[in-house]
Length: 90
Length: 480
Image 1 (spheres, rainbow over the protein chains, first blue to last red):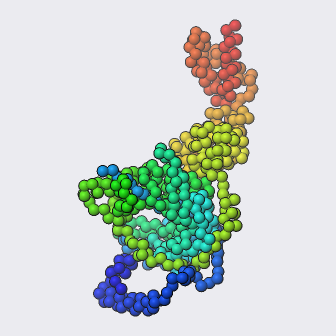
Image 2 (image 1 turned 45 degrees about the horizontal axis):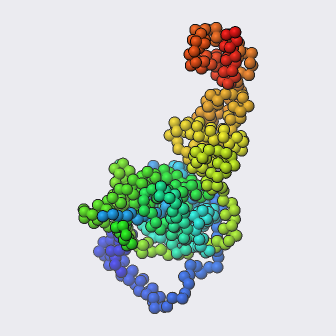
């Protein structure tokens, strides 16, 4: 697996030891799925779900259960009612 | 060398629901930061996404008004991307089986009528809002908009001119707002448009290098961005001044140019996969018919009704049916005061000019229709005259007064006592004898001056028509 693509997609920079560790893990994972590729699926419909349940809906009625302060307090950093994150401007 | 511009549009429209797409948080625009959030739209583990039925119904309505083929069994998928505006790390959207495909919309430009074909419409959740704060060197996140329901309307590359794009967006706005799908306010971001643009030599069928322009929040900005970007492409091809790359570009309205944002990630990078939490949704004919039968009058049907049945002018009808909001005010007021010409006049002449003074556009005008109608009723039954009525409208706009009560409390009712008006006229004729003589000598303009003097003495509370006629009689008698 090309670890550079993984880094760019997740917007993370990894150290060399991390790169080799994750690279090895990812290779094992991808290889274990490779067995699926040997199966011919040409005439098989895409399976979206194994459950026989359809049309599960919710009514359009607003509920507010947890105050904003409680939800914000869970964040490592907050500022003036906002969640604070490292600068992400691209 | 002659070039033609080829464009396709992706239009995001926020659905007019009370709540978000996959949780019961309020979805209204304008709340304080992070006021409308819960563990589900914050992406906390173990919070299942349960879809809002109204959003699906509005999606069906959008499919119907765009002549699209509705998918009998639609599904939702996860689109992976890492950016803090979506805390789950993916957006729930429709990739494999969107709600509808192959629609079309007819547009009209100076070149005539044309069909614009649609590839598909899909339902998806919106992302949150990031504020990049330089003072604290961090990004601030507001999750209010996270998971607000949208439809994305994807056209085929059918557009050739900015005029066609603007006509299409106008038409889409009318179709969707009258169907109750969305309020389609570009300034508030409830309707957003990305333009995919490329140029090619006339006669060529191959598409040129494509760029995507984002961040335009008015029709004017969209037209300007298209003109700039197509010229940039042509210059690059003609002079070799730069190499065109497939990328996303941001329109800067102040500078009037587009700027590169990032190279567009290839579709495969999003690693779409079926969302295992959201069960497939079957949309049968019965459901489609129910939605079809509950669709309100379109702006085009309404235009026909206003001009043909109610006898309103084409000009007035166009203004009223050009905005869902004005159209609602018209209908709402007509319920209480059934005189279409009068109602339209009050909306277009008086209400819109007050709104304009307050920097409010046609879609932002708000008025209590019952009170609005009461003013017209008070004029109609000659309780007050038009000038006082205009003042009352301003008072409703500013302070939400009750017009009937206000007229009573401030004794603004018209003087209906003819004797009092006649006596006042005699007083004015005496006081203004010079003006009366000049009027008789042929200075016709002074008649209005004399009317004004009488009105002033009656504190503006008489019917000017009656004053006019009584004054004319009095001057005539004076002559004899």
